[in-house]
Length: 297
Image (cartoon, rainbow, N blue to C red; front, side, top):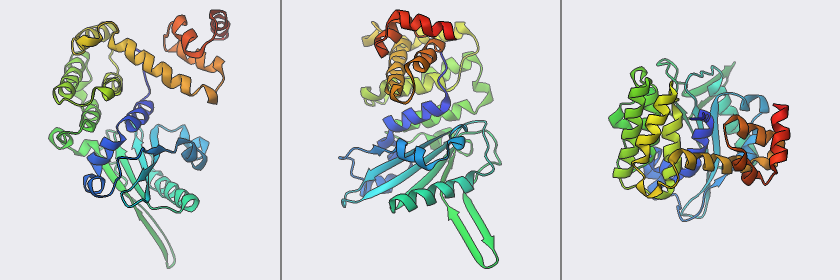
């Protein structure tokens, strides 16, 4: 099973389930003020202009989203996910810098939230404070640390974003990292998703997140998991779930081709074990072109 970076998984699931994200973390605001009849606007390009390139190489996922409200206004949501294993001592300061830059550029109200998925129980930045002589600044932001929650607390009824949070929670439990345990809890979450009757439109992204958030150690475990997973989706036996995920990632990569050369994109897909036929169809390049790229690797 090829590996998808955690930051990419988080960014993908936030876009797919952003309405559910708002209901999960801000239920009162979502119910009273958010106009779900209007599409969200994901401002990735705008955020990239604000965030220095050197910071983008860190292991986290950011989203800046424009949310429309029922009174005809807009609300800017800055979502930041700290990836497991990465602790940034300058994080609170960086959250303030993001807030300040966004406010300066757009002059809009901003709600900021940080989700911590790492395993250090003492790491939980919640505010940035600065003081010099009689000048003082305190910046507080919303935070959510998965390690501090119970499995029951993370399981919000009737909200598929619970599956995302439970996946991240399981990844923090050391006993859950062995292949046999992984198969069990991953399949249990897939079962939970289907039994809850959530939208089938979101199935691919949910299963992609569950399947790839933690990697198996042995190839035999990968095959065992894929075989058992296929039993949950009988109507799609013509295409295995792994092939569906491959196809979805291919589309995601194709959308990014405008930002990188076709050579780089093809090279990336070759490294992720896509077939030459899949690459050819995705980017509309010849097999001869792909052979030339392989020579450069």
